[in-house]
Length: 121
Image (cartoon, rainbow, N blue to C red; front, side):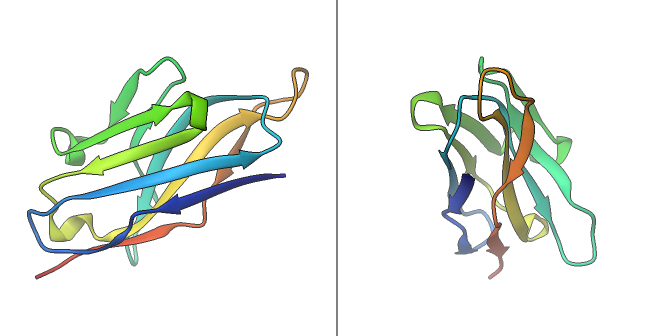
């Protein structure tokens, strides 16, 4: 099967930086878009950023200019560099990948288990 494993979360002071990673493994034929969502307590899950296989990126307005999404297609890995972090960035961050497991199968979205990011002094 397919697994998405995130790493890099933690506690950071306001103004600090963190880099999240998410590696997809298992039976993978091809990956289309990959992305990051987040969910704060009591709020709905929201898109943070996503990136196509060709490198086209899309960001939520709240993170533009502070966060950068990138990917390594050879490693099936997506990254999220987060700079100038604010307390309101505190959330569980989830990665996802739209992938298919064979040449004639449908694309399906897979999710990671989530990693906690806490921004606090």
